Length: 108
Image (cartoon, rainbow, N blue to C red; front, side, top):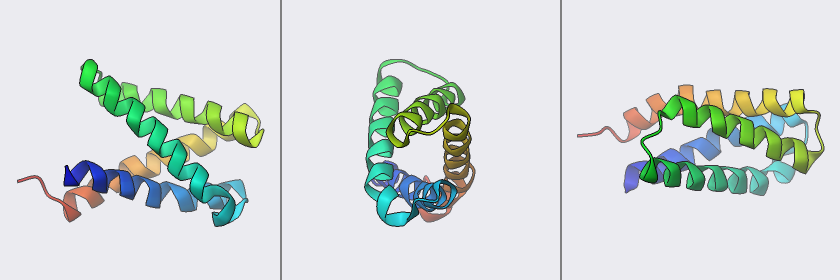
């Protein structure tokens, strides 16, 4: 139970500064949004994985697209900008968060 919770916290902590910087909106405007966005996508992803054995890269690609749509809708951004920021956020949390999680909470 500890490792999934830590993975979620790491995801938010890695993606939030990136969203604040790339959007130009700052930390105050993006904090709660980033937490809610990741809470919704994590909840959906865990639900899908509990019901169907979906490959994680396919699930991650779906999350990038859905989060891009939410970014475009909420902030009224063009689709290309929303997709680029969503991709950057998710690649950052995936490529940096995975090794960090392994280092902070190794699986025994």
